[in-house]
Image 1 (tube, rainbow, N blue to C red):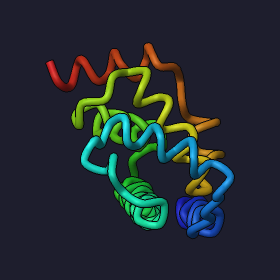
Image 2: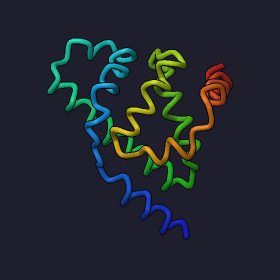
Image 3: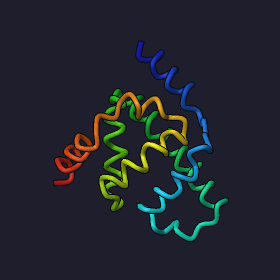
Image 4: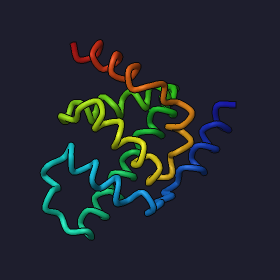
Length: 126
């Protein structure tokens, strides 16, 4: 059964780059990663595509290790908070980023709330 779930996730996530969310994601990404403020549009598109590939790889690693997708979202939240994003900036980045990368079903089904994510973050970082 676990192999079927893994296969479904793999098939639905394989680099479905949805450029509808690119502009919003770019703005939110630059709020957290200020080193990308002066990137051209093309450089930013390349960076976001790379970020999508990383996101997909991290998701697949979580699944392969038997971890839940909730845990995957907690990890991603922690990663962006650790980079210096405020709770609101991270939430404002994660939703368009997941939509951009074709992982919208994951964030829609497994995101509990900003308060929940922040509480988990404080426990881990505290």
